[in-house]
Length: 346
Image 1 (cartoon, rainbow, N blue to C red):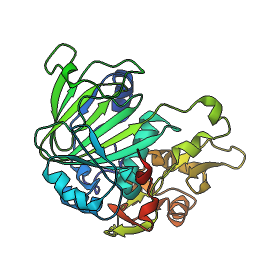
Image 2 (image 1 turned 90 degrees about the vertical axis):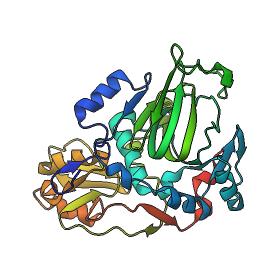
Image 3 (image 1 turned 180 degrees about the vertical axis):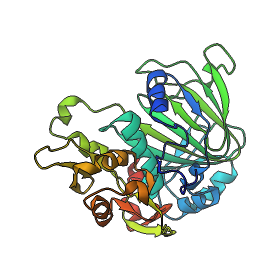
């Protein structure tokens, strides 16, 4: 979409155009039925590095793992990376959202629009020089909701009927019945967003070079453990590490980007203000700015004209770093690479 002509753009607009599309997805798919969405625009191209840059990212010291024929190498040994890719193994970077702020923004939008707070969120960036084999074999991921985004190349996915809870995650490949009753096989092409419900058996085969993202949400935590946690604390989580932006985005004279998650609360009638919750705390804004506050939940970009609100609300949002005149960085060069969560990811 052209940022100069569209006022408010959510990270999900590329695949789910409006509230009606989101409601339809929740009603028809969420939790039980796969869904495949073709891109409506090219905005997804700026979400993550290309294949060569992703390979350099893996070689730069961030955590990665290798899998081929169900055998895992979790050492993160950079000397094995080139040989693994050349052999057609699957290389993946766990919790890669910590160094890819635009990916974290998409996760916030999915959380706010569809999945809710207090669920374990994980991300994986997959790199494969495909040789027509399935590195992980037939398996299911357990009780998680997954969203896959194909960034480059093509993958063939085969899905089976839902497994029962408690079923071993690694399944016998002979159980797969591509083209059979209750089985589906199809291709994921660049820009495609694919939803995979919990306990869905699947196998993936890459043809040539492939780059893809997988985002997963675990089951909601038990209510008892949430009694002392306000919902906003879960909706405003921002799991991006400190570091240097690579490259530094350019400033824009007419457009603004939401820089951190922001969730508006109920209006305080006595003071005629409402709270806007962020990872750093709460900011009170005048009642007239409520429409703007509600719009920020999915971390959209918007025109300066759309962001204008009375009583200096926009100035306060800019001053507190909630809105900014440059996009989020494509990548963060972390200050402490060894502290990334992916090193502890089993």
